[in-house]
Image 1: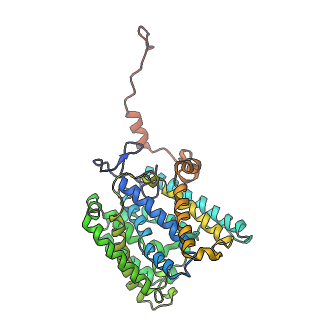
Image 2: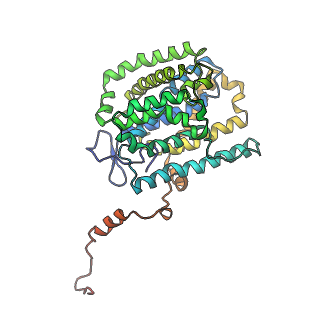
Length: 380
């Protein structure tokens, strides 16, 4: 099953530890499925914490999580896009796995806001992504430009320059969240340049041990900078001028936050299990959890659920955290996948021309030998 993170198959390799065969003969690496599941749990938990930022401890944890949960997703997406080109089969997957879900769920969330929040004038627009759907817009652009990144001699420095230019260009506006497309692009490009041995390096025990003081330092830094650093720097959705600072702080802050994100992302990967776990299979369904969990977050906003005093107590925060993790876990399960595959992963053969090369390969495949009963004659 394809997701935004692994919608383009990479060349087949020796079966790594903890992997299992996937449909079509490819091998799924348990490490990546585990990483995607844990990242989607952090996304859901982060969105829940985002409603309770009046608590200093919650906001500290929120800031730390926001330094690496989406960068981890984006880096994995880039890694599994290495073989993407503009061949018809890849374009079809891009349309059915990214464009169609975006159109369906952008429409659904707009209608949900119109009727669930009693906003009859709220319109439906595909240019202004709702909440978390910016990732699908960005993924579409990144995948489509993958051949360019593969052709450029030094793609990562180029992407960092583009991220810096985006941070000083408020005229870009909000259409398709192009600020995030530019400012998060270095993680996608980095993923394109990585190889399996790089991920083996982060699994070393020394990296895992070193990650503990790194996360402690990240938490201390998040707490200390809370009064001075706006959350917009972690969202990467605005230019420096829109965040109320001088233009020259844009490149400095973007490069600094991307550097911090890279370090914490490596530390996150260091703690991702390499073997199959009870949640490994859920990693293949993270796109379902990603697309659906925000309905619960929005429903809480529309009903003033987060204003309850109990949720602002330690036990209330803990309960909301467990609920968010459990809810997104259920949304990644196979029953949900089967029910919504028609809109999240539609086949849509009717919408595309058949690739001439693919058809020729099918015709060239040897036909299976006929089986007939003893003495049965074959028509000639």
